[in-house]
Length: 171
Image (cartoon, rainbow, N blue to C red; front, side):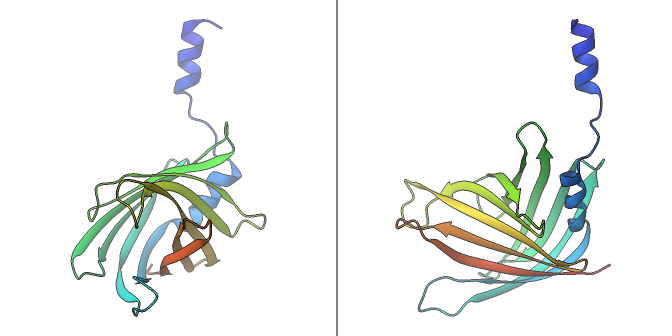
């Protein structure tokens, strides 16, 4: 293959796959209520906000959020999600104005295609010099209702849920 053919192939927009089409479940304007679990002896902290999710030509979704953090401050979030046919995995990022870490996602759908589990590595809750494994889990409940839960893998290997959010479509 010549150099010009390679360049043309790289510039050709790929066709969306069924996994890309699955991401369209997230499109729209959403309101959410969240609960953060700060410890076993503490009541959950509640917060809420809104999220707007748009498509980038059917291959990526971009979710921009505004929220009240559990500490009462305002926060901004940005999530990108797509699917890589070469690896067969979902991929993406998440950043928030309340932290300096960029979360890099690698995930997969469950068999009945209702739950997307996104794996990431990030700072440990218990030791700032270590990293830990995390999961953000998006579940489609209906066209107008989805949930997001976040969990961390403990030193014993168990998963501990520390946040849940309930999203309802606004429009």
